[in-house]
Image (cartoon, rainbow, N blue to C red; front, side, top):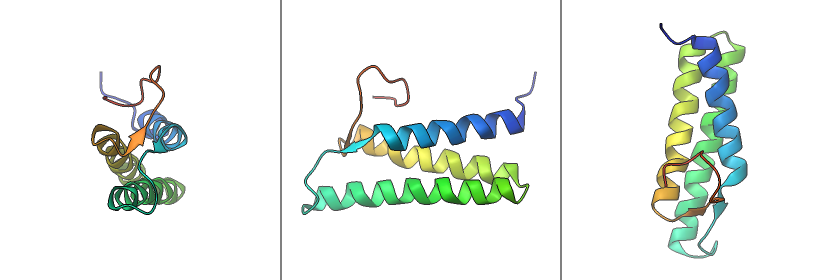
Length: 94
């Protein structure tokens, strides 16, 4: 059975928004890694904003792509140690 595009888009939006709330920058802001973490967070937030714009424009395919890319930025940042996340979360592939 194929995935429902609207349901999946909504789920990925929630997942990205929750991930942004859960991820905390680990390195100090004034270090190169702190700058990298801020840039990853900014990219993820931008993709969340873009996805919401696409969804509001009735373009769920690009909305889903945006939410997925944003989530990828955060998940990569977690794997690189740029963000700390709660151990009990299932939002990341740590």
